[in-house]
Image (tube, rainbow, N blue to C red):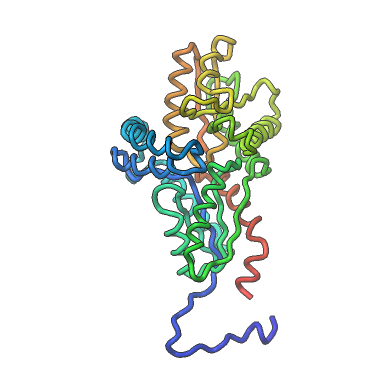
Length: 353
């Protein structure tokens, strides 16, 4: 290190204290209501369903429908679903619990090598907000911040809107930090291996053998695909690579899409239709995994592990199992650590010189 680099400029005695320069990593997940009551759910849904990245129909028509119909009906329905999976011990949703754990565990993992790294978390919708966490990180001395949206497959409705919200917050800052955005990772080798290991270890605990593994991804309107969103292709890619890593035949793994909303055509096949038909074709023992979710949430735990299971049994199925998301297990944390270290290349030497 040169003499010029070692020398620190002197500051006036009354100069505000400038914190030691750090590097920040902000994990961003979709969001969650603060509680299961009507008004908490309503606040969350209003923010979520008002996002033009998510709902891009005529804004005047949608605003009327949202405020006059959906927000008066949907909160009660969603509230019942959240109550089914709510974590009573900590009074929060599983998504919030797992995202916080991921952040805290990653911080401890990184502390062993990099004491100037700050790992934190935020939600695109709800609390804690992206803006509040970016301001907190900036005030702690984070002059460089990596934004990591927790979506392995890219979509404008998830990854893009998370980064949009971060840029919106940055636009209000007088002294902006330098920012990087991590890309999606649908074909990342560590991610695919972690998924495959979770499938194999889960199946080993069963006293029956699945006829089929369903890879269930959150759906999107089909027109989003035709408009250029790569999400559908990313989902198929992840599912194919998972099957290849498992070394299973093509007919042993099948893609389906869940969470359809509204009347227009969405990405197909719809998982509800698939599980109703499977027993009729002799597939009466199935396993389901949701590779598009980094953490278990209402869509995986209530919609799939409970609702889809019931539909399968009602349709003549015999054995059903849901394979949990990677959550904050060691394998899942290693996947996230890999994404972080890959994207932070070059920043640590710069921040500590």
